[in-house]
Image 1: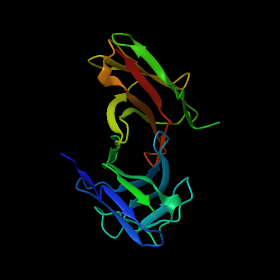
Image 2: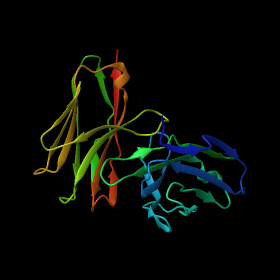
Image 3: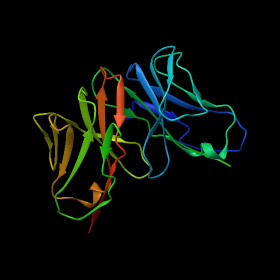
Image 4: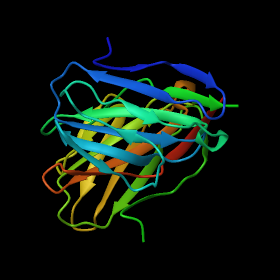
Length: 111
Length: 110
């Protein structure tokens, strides 16, 4: 049973559309993260948050934005999707000491 | 130099073989270490923690060598189902900073 949920699982959308990828966790974790990963490639951190009203950009520059209004919710928004945004987006969270839990990911295709 | 480095592989091994991966890290103050497994087009999942004293879970053994700054994963009696990418993960800065290795791909061959 997953404790971190991402929706949608798959999304195909046209260029220029605004999209929001949802991520919610029920573990009460303060720290949440968004990663971007292309098939067969490494994970790239694009955003993270250490708590409510805290958001930071990650190592990989991204045109997306995030918000953290509630502890359990960490949505990612693309104001105007482009084909270069096609990728898998993975959300993760962690508590004080034990590892990472990932969501199942959103596979985004922009046509 | 990357903070966490892994040999990307692929490691192609026959069923039943023993295979070992290493992962080196550059931050001597790193605090916690983990191995994750990622199947193709799936999310990474925690495989096991890594302790200085060693950690064994069935066919899998993880080890930490702080002096040489590397962690290792040993898989004995490889199964076809072990085929995946194995990621090492390093926590530092009071769990504020998490660094993933690029992963080592394992392919177990019948």
